[in-house]
Length: 459
Image 1: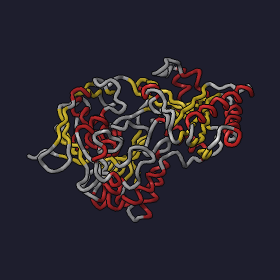
Image 2: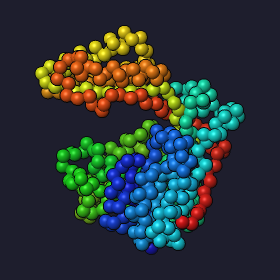
Image 3: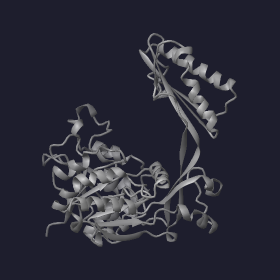
Image 4: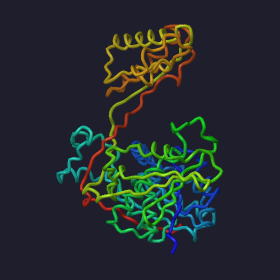
């Protein structure tokens, strides 16, 4: 008997990724599942602000536009879609999707599974009263002292709720904050019937999801592997995992698309946000990256990398919680200086601005200056800055709890164009404006205190 295999493609690596990628994946070859990954830590706070202004907002609006394009073909080819586009408002996201399905005449053929329960913003005081401190994983500080500044708080659910939604008959699954890896693992659990304690196979799905979660970053994008030779960057193919029920999989892309699938490129993606390679933590299991075996397929004529041998262990008793909070204000601005003496001019302008800010008695938590074009990216590692460069972009940024100080900084930068060193070629980005800083607070909480909610709604 042939082993069951499914093809899972990821068409978005973040909110703002290439809008043509989902259509490319649906139109240019066979797939069974299309996953769309929109969420990052800061994205949740942005969505929470949007929802505060409009109760119908708070989700990735790009998702609705994408689905309006691909839904007819997905229905025709029985392609199921899994997306964390729900953000902090999965219900509104599902309602907008249902409206698209009705407009396209597809209501009878689309069932929307919704995963909620991850948003615990309103429950934080209750949990803290129960003795859960939500200690910052990086600083050890308890959340209580920052509670009045919190803007969003979301638990990372895993693949199990997605698999359950698919088992209920969902053709499109919309979640809030889920693990990126869960978008791919959920379909595998559903299709293959993997047990909740089949740690090695679950770890395989985790690794597969991790490889494709950033979209084209594993098919040649943002890749150092002989990047000059990567063909047709403009038409780069987005990744597909061909997963088998035995816990092995291939990473590939549609034939004829640009980019490249190689062991080196896949390894680069594996390094992304890896942490301890022996203990990659998810709500579904712990995956051991040191057990991954990768092999290039040089026989079929297609670009394919096989992964096998992956081992896993039971998960911890905690959920990760992503919390964002207000942390003061920031502003940044830039001036471009031209040859001759571009670097010297930029340094003089920086010193001049700092003295003016100091003379005004303005206090900042931090002031940072970058001389782009003269070693800004690598600092001391690049050696002494180049003294004679054709142009330098002077970028200055400030941070403070005092909004008025940040606003005054913005007004002090522009005058340097006429009252400072010569050959300023433009105030890059205009006069700096004060922006609220949204900071990230990672924490843990016991798994038993929060449960996902899964329900199915017809379009």
